[in-house]
Length: 131
Image (cartoon, rainbow, N blue to C red; front, side, top):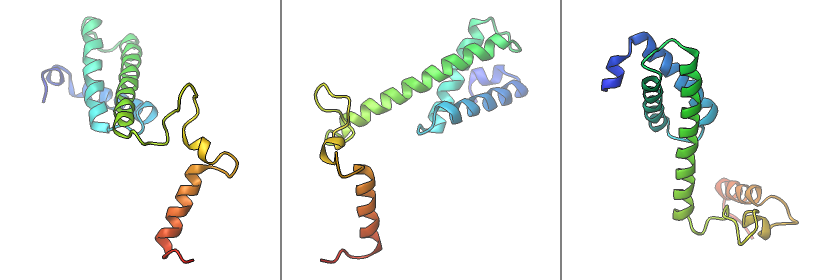
């Protein structure tokens, strides 16, 4: 149990936890919940300190919500940059000055590349491919 958590009442902690869970399900999808939860509690504690440790004010929830959402965006941005660096051959990357992903150049007239690959994998999983 952290020092900041001990400073909160059990009621405040449960309310903050519900608030953070709600923000995670709305803005943090695809991210690790425990990592986001820890970051969100740190942001909540910082905002609480900034408004002189006054708990039951609407201003606390508004500022904390803004800071937590921004922290989730930062975590997502860092994760996406890390994934992009690790997967240099990923077809989701853009090419040159274009904003279109690479896979749109491979299957422009035939259909959606992702659906084609998924269909191929599904067919392969069902049975051996025959000539």
